[in-house]
Length: 318
Image 1 (cartoon, rainbow, N blue to C red):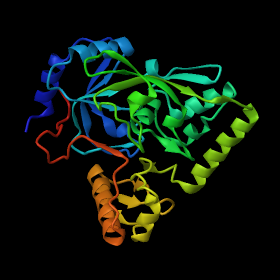
Image 2 (cartoon, rainbow, N blue to C red):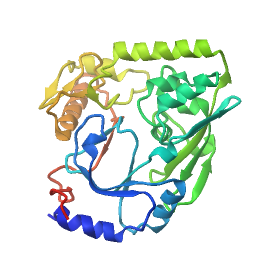
Image 3 (cartoon, rainbow, N blue to C red):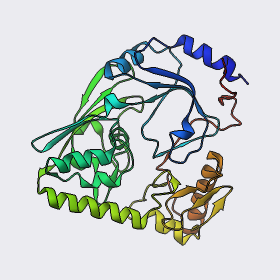
């Protein structure tokens, strides 16, 4: 197994110069809401869209890239993430409003977009308050909550393709479906334009408050969790299937199925990523045995296991 002492300099030496920041052996556990997982071989925070485009145009062949946002819907495996992990920073966190539309960067939090829309008296985007992630992640998975999905308010998206070229995508290009889009996984969303309708600011504020209160009452929002674990099967609720299979409060190591909302996995404080993934797979098996329904992960699992030869190991000292 190669050590980080060998991996890090060789990868960094192969990467193109950037105006942003490269961080070898970056602790992704600190960036994940689960607070678990191994490091990124290299974490890249681009200075802006042009910097990211230049990187994508010049990156060496064979170097994998992984995109992360706020870390709310990912499980970073214990062996870390080989290659370059891209995280969009402040340059991608802008939001502006005009008439009934909202233009925003892909790195901005969904809830911040809802607030900007409220301040401009634009109704219809309140549901974003209930989605714990970024606009980029919401575009990638057609995120939804409280009866609405991104596709319902979508006008256009801007992305960089695998060669760093700018692509502007209309709804037909996105190929939206439940919790997914048909856009190439290697493309990086950098911005979007969303639509609402002119409304009353006080009414919008009230709806945002209702959504926040409902989340607090029904979900373990203060726990170390990654949000909804499994996608809802057609016509059914994942939480109900999990509950019916007797999984409420089920544990594996330091991981536990939430008793407040059974479609949430919790890090009780000592969990590893392996604990959480094994618990999730145990839940899937029990649901399949009980109901015949095969649950699919909604949380994105990235990286490799600690036992994988590609695992990122070592202290990171050069």
